Image (cartoon, rainbow, N blue to C red; front, side, top):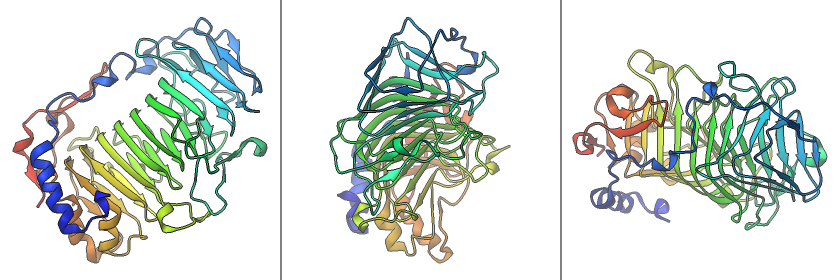
Length: 425
């Protein structure tokens, strides 16, 4: 793969690529968000729930869009059953007994909404009273490969142990079809400290389909991907307290056309990132170096809505740890302190150059660009950002983009021509 090339060869390829196929960042490349997303979900008046879901779904079940459902507590889909949800269905999720939907290994979730009729999981609170973390989230356990010594794992969050195993050796398994789904106000941390993210995917195989998903106001991570192999696309994360995209346990695949919109005052106590890539779980080990997480991210828009009055509250856009491999292509990063932060597992410059590459992209930051534990290689590590465009000084979000604060669909086209910005050399 390109990111395994020598540094000299890589730089030549990047420079050639940037000149010939550079993305036009002055055009709206996020048209896929129109029609089904909701950037002000706290103002939406959803109908009240009419029918409560059982806490154990052991037989094939179909949810109709002419009924509004209430999900309360932990709802498990078990015994190989399929839960199918019709387009346009609304599921109100209990905040007093925080709801979680757990699709166990061998079971299946088919939630195929449409642009005109998305499927919505949202808080059961009234408009203007909903908060991040009102309810739990959606957890899907597959049989795909994970890079633990045992090849399996236990879903985080202290769920029922008999329903918590994930992982296997089925690279092409199909556990879910998720399309045009909104997940709002999830990520509850009162009932359980771990596991209640917006959408948690464990050991997904290549035949599973995940696209056109929006997670809004998550109290923890918006997306949490553990192992598996898949190409996931058209994902939106809006103002998460945790990470927007957490990728770990040897996931192999692509995330394309993703949007993370953060706010400098909305974060976790430990600090949060638009993308956090973890090579392996230290507690579970891994089988060999080639099994670490290896993700390609393309056409990403990672924006912190910061300006000169509050940018000091931001950190890096991307965090990478435990020797994870990350390739960023054709993307925009703005409003953060740095592009990427490396943990102590990257002990040398060659380790960093092997593990991370970014090309054909643009960034607007207020730090140096790369944050490393080993300060002796900090200056040289900036080479990984070569031939990407960047702003000479930090620019406020409203000055940089066309309409980033729109409540309909935010627009992140650059106001000025890309050619007016510097090239890292």
